[in-house]
Every structure is written in C-alpha cells, then in structure tokens.
Image: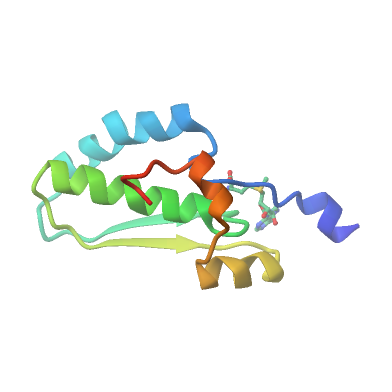
Length: 106
Ligand SMILES: C[S@@+](CC[C@H](N)C(=O)[O-])C[C@H]1O[C@@H](n2cnc3c(N)ncnc32)[C@H](O)[C@@H]1O
C-alpha cells in the first residue's frame, strides 16, 4: 500500500513544457543574477528513480555552455522511497529512454 500511494512514475523531461521554460527563461535569468563563481544549488524533492534530476543537470549544462558560464551546480535529489533512490544512484537506464532523450543529450 505504501508503494501504491507513492506512485513513482517518472521519465526524462517528463513535462517538456516545464523544462522548456526552465531552459529558455528561468535558468538564464538565474545565472544572469549571480557571479560566475557563485555555486547554484537545486533540490528535486521527490525524484523517484532520478530522471528529473538528471534532466535538470542536462538543462543546466546546456544553458551554462550557451552563456560561456562555468558555475558549480549542485543538484540534490531526495525521495521517501529508498528502492527508487537506489536506482537513481546507479544512474543506469534502459534503451527505451531514447523516446524522451534526444540523440545529442544521449
Ligand atoms: C510521481 S513521482 C514524480 C517523480 C518526478 N518528480 C517527476 O516529476 O518525474 C512522485 C515521487 O514523490 C515521492 N514522494 C511522495 N511523497 C513524498 C514525501 N513526503 N517525501 C519525499 N518523497 C515523496 C514518491 O516516492 C515518488 O517517487
């Protein structure tokens, strides 16, 4: 019942519109407000098996590269489901992620 209530469904770039907004406005605005040596910390509060955290990391790399910035970015990811966290820690995903992750990102 605990597992049923948690609903650990996730995938890379699960809500594409939200990731587009992050990439096009939120992260560029954020890095414009801080100096190049300011660390940036993010927290994915219910990360399930990690896809959202790794998606966010990819977006940050892309935006930083586009802006010639080299800020240290730390992404914290937590979840109440320890089994999901174990999968997230491994960071190994099936070939089926090609449905959500572009060839460049892969
Ligand atoms: C539907 S998944 C969403 C995963 C990811 N954020 C995404 O959008 O792709 C919801 C996750 O939140 C976690 N969760 C639910 N309640 C939580 C709580 N109180 N504290 C931490 N994690 C929680 C669940 O275990 C589950 O992995």
